[in-house]
Length: 253
Image (cartoon, rainbow, N blue to C red; front, side):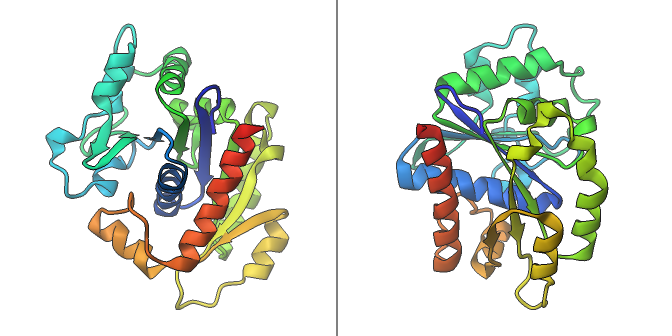
């Protein structure tokens, strides 16, 4: 989470879809419960997220953050023009890449340009939620956001593949600039029909702060392109509201 006047929460996870869902739902919870200005930044350019979150939007309506990052001088208006907004939800915006875009679509982004983007977002929002990829080495947008984040949520699924990934890849993020010692570790249950080794996963992850339950309602919302609304699943919403409360409480300190 990046703070200033805008706080930035960085969501780092192993599985692309689950971390995107978490980031979008966290932003929605903060927006709905606290009536704050919230912007979500989706960093993935290998599998652009905007068409996944907004499958019912026409492509021409989904502006790309790559356009703003390609400007010689990044101005606030450039960023605002790239925001995807939702009718009836003022002060709630989304930035990301469009389908068909990849690393060769735009000039290579520099760290300074990403910092300019984050600074601009700080100036126009209360909270910035950054949805990242697991491969920071090849994504300067995500890597820079992680370094600047005030609060970082790291998600994993309770399965052997996720445990293996964490044990092998997390040492790559041991550099002090990533503040791994302050990451908030969560477990995200991906399916209600499978018995997962949750306790064994907790033992490997250490200091697990929360367990996100599986929600059929949220899965349906993902498929229908409605993640930015409340799920209606009481258990899931209560858990997400508790995480949102943790973020807001941290920001107020």
